[in-house]
Length: 158
Image (cartoon, rainbow, N blue to C red; front, side, top):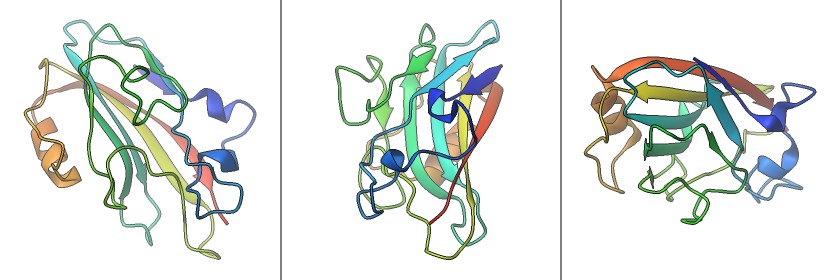
């Protein structure tokens, strides 16, 4: 399985428009994500974007669950837009405390932060989680359901 984001066309650095609005130039637009080479038997996908920097302590920027098995991409700006998100998918709360996508906002001077964009192919049609579920509950629900996963990394700093 392979995953990539068209936002990372010439570099691994994320353009500022994907950062939160608290970052100068940030528009909090959710990243476009594409994936391919999906294993047979895939019944759904989960997408996550996690800041892996030690200061961030695995800060969750986005979780999208129950993505249909025929889906191979989520377009730019899809977060919060039921017409652009795949039918039946669900966004969880991010570490900022709100639903959907929350863009990068690393502390000034903390250096480059790596944002892991991961897609999981699952052997179940859906995870039984509610909108208020925590990232830890999602990770627990993934146990025993992952057929394959792939990660792309974007970098952002301020």
